[in-house]
Image (cartoon, rainbow, N blue to C red; front, side, top):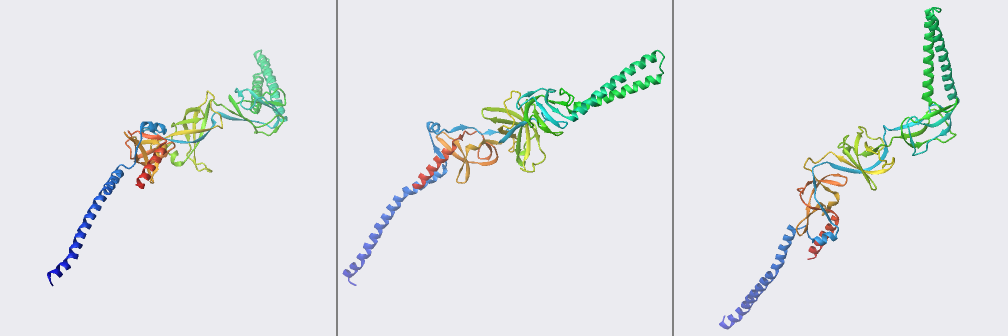
Length: 390
């Protein structure tokens, strides 16, 4: 091969090498141009480390209506549930007809007050006439027996009558007294009074208010028919129904906050049933509430917040349920920072009405968003969407 032919052969090879070198430079430049993206990717890593951070000014926080609070450490959890005001079982009494007959007088209407011993109904009955007739007859016999006894005592003192006549007269007087008191008791048990031989008055057994009237004038009733229901409403009961798991954390003496409209008062648990209700499979619980001011009405629906035994120990951390949001299937709480908020994942425990126990994730000293925290969740979602677009 001549020199000329050798040069002609090497020229294309040299050019290819040069072009390859230029391509390498372009590749390096491309690599250098890609490094800012890598840096941005690195920036994304930094963003991930700070994921959940929301930057908001104080004015923005105020405008969004976000309220701040601190977790509650220790104390008892509460359970909020609907309840009903009922009459005190110990202060409520049914007034019934002791004998059958016709109702000729009802002196009290619903809501009216009565005093113990006051006549509130009169029943006209042949049985009443028999009872009162027996009482009058035994009274007359007792008067006669007492008169005979007095005469025999005088005669015996004058040594006119023997002692056995005095003993017989005394025995007759005693028996007549027993018969009369028995007749009195029968009339009293039926009602007593009434203003006529064939009428018996029914007296109020307790002082209080009439909460039920079951009959009308002229109605014929049988013995034991309910006429009235009277309740002493100076104390009322709150009827609750708890799940068995919650009832196990309630004891007599636990406090209950009762709320209705613009009223609020404290009651105390007096009874926790050891037996489930057959229909609801719930545990009946009764709390007693002072009602001397007459602020609570029987049958009124209320909301009751029941103190439960602390299920998380003395250092349990509790927060409002409104402070918890779900982000990517995780429960988070928004903790206040110098520049805004930080979404902090938490592990939750028992939910007790309006509060929930935090088992992990918070120390208990943080300031957290307790109201309108859903706006922070929405803001966090916007930030993540913007990041994904980039």
